[in-house]
Image 1 (tube, rainbow, N blue to C red):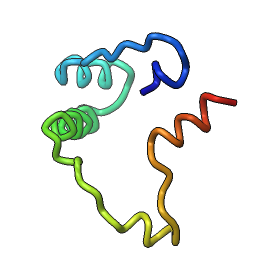
Image 2: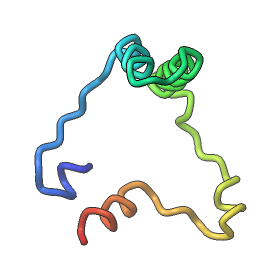
Image 3: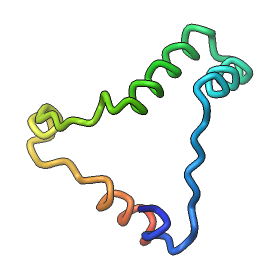
Length: 77
């Protein structure tokens, strides 16, 4: 989607979870934070966040902007 919007080739790089955790610790975050972020990354890869929840729309009082529209707004300025 970013490649299409920007007109530039943007490559996705899948970072192994262990490398993610090692680098989080390397840059000064506690091991517990690294473990939490690793767990979130694994959950995302497993599709555990792939659902629509109406809570944000209720809180905002409007439909949230979808990702493509957000990216178009950010990168087409």
